[in-house]
Image (cartoon, rainbow, N blue to C red):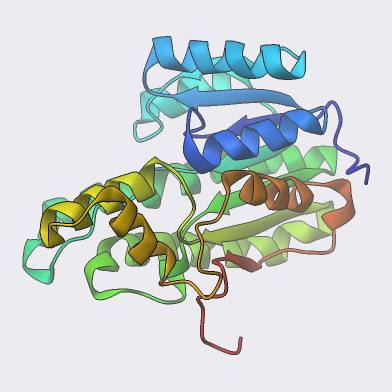
Length: 259
């Protein structure tokens, strides 16, 4: 299927690895002009060259910390009028209520609410003027199924979800859509972190830890990042202009609710 986005400019935040990388690669396959982002300049440039070489396209590397105003300014200076914005950022690690002090809350919001909210504020007006825009927020399954140890992540990402829903109803008239992807248990460095944590807590091997993580899903396997990237590309497509304000769960069937 031709998704109709060849030549569109796409900013993909936090895209030197994991799900962000998968989204950048999927958009490259569709012919988008992709701007990848990471905090480490050397790594970001290396990943850009790797992607560019693999897909025979130029990939722009923007080394910037999107948790800061300075970083977001650098990102938007490199691509001031994106057609596509993929908001992504690492979430806080699992923790307990007693550690959720003011500093912990601010840290979660500074990563999982403010960057996405402020980048949307910056790019939506020009998207509406040009009558095309696709915004995808990579949030978490925890938005709809919060876990006791993931309260910080769930709360911050839910705030972004609420803002996105409010804006989605206003922007759709100008062919600007805002949707959210809710991943759970994809085979990324995040799951390696979770496996190592389980290994230390339970005294088990890496293979045993990964098997236990996979067994929490009805699919009984970890999701592949490529599957996530392809879903993201479709939501960004010209074919998806009637879909907005939605939370698409990519979770191997783990969500038990009806709606």
